Amino acid sequence: MKFLHSRIAIAASTALAAASVVTIVTLTVHAQSTQTQRAAPMDHMMMHQHMHGMAAKSPFTSERTDDPSEIVSLPGPMQEHMLGNMRDHLATLNTVIGDVASGKFDTASKLLEERLGMSSLSLHHAAEMAPYFPQPMQDAGTGMHHAASRLAVALQDASVTRTFDSMREVNAALHEVTSACVGCHTQYRLR
Image 1 (cartoon, one colour):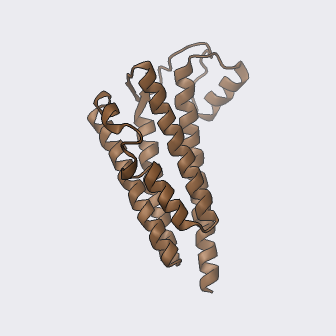
Image 2 (cartoon, rainbow, N blue to C red):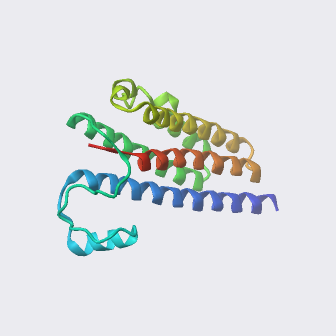
């Protein structure tokens, strides 16, 4: 019975994580598409607008007037670096989710802390980037890195004792990380 509960918890964790990643991918792709100023094919744009409930608008317009997110201006190279960091965050979460699905909790925990946790701040040049961000955006980023470190600890705990409760803690910690990502991507966009 304990084995069945663990399998159910792992399946639930994987499903929740997959849904979270889809949300992050959607927000990342959306953020990138608003930055490129390339014209999208008309049918793709119309489907995109329909999916998001937006009024029809010319696909050749470079700015969305209905986007309430705050524009954060960065010099070109820093903007590319920031987008690279976001892609790395997403790839890291994807690998962690795969490791959790495979029962590799220690591997997932180590990768998560190195690439997304508080230990990763120098890797992403957080100190150099922070002065360009509004304070609430800085706080959101720091909160996400703290949440990733808490997820790393939850994964370590789950590797020692795989119970329904430990998997629930993993899911809660993962949700905290992805919620921080979604919140920041909803509030801010790069220019």
